[in-house]
Image (cartoon, rainbow, N blue to C red; front, side, top):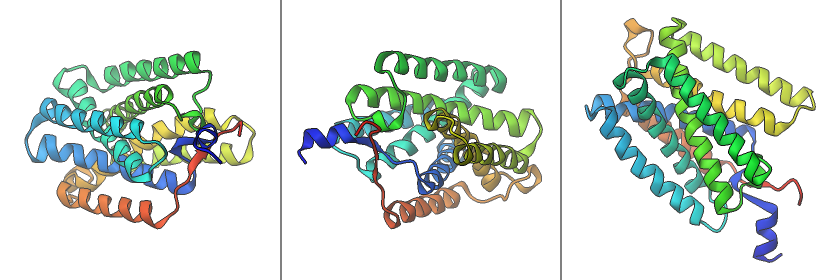
Length: 254
């Protein structure tokens, strides 16, 4: 099989498996603890932290797009980059700019839906198995960036403003993901239609899990150090990435 044929069959992103979702939740949780480490523990603030993570995100996306084929390490580093910048960006919009969680969540939801609509309109599909060209990858990563930022705002809104707390947030978002998984396995609803809500929901789940790990006990957290929590999440991610085989998503028309 020549390279041209391989590009027609395989995507530049991983196949959606159980391990994919486990690593995605670990990555989103790391995004929360890692983002808060720079902005809060290191006292860099939301604006400077967002700038630093944005540079890392842009560099990671460039490397990912230029790669000739799917590479698990490059892909997951890019995902972590989106979730860390999403954390500090959401906090900047919601807190520093005074828009609030409700306003920030609404704005980001509109941006996410617009990104998916433009992607679908221009390329005909938003399925991950079609992400194998620079143009489709750019749409993919813009959409991912919007979803990660939205998820942070949604998680904070649910845990703080709604008063559910971190444990309640874990229950709510974990429960919603369980509902989507049930629909996935027992109905014939489009897997692409189910993928994006599930992908979005892993981010607020990661946000509340991250806050649960590092917030003080009197606020409902475990009071772990953000540094130690982030280090532990990195180790877990490395184990899952290298211990389990990763295959690129296979094109539906192959």
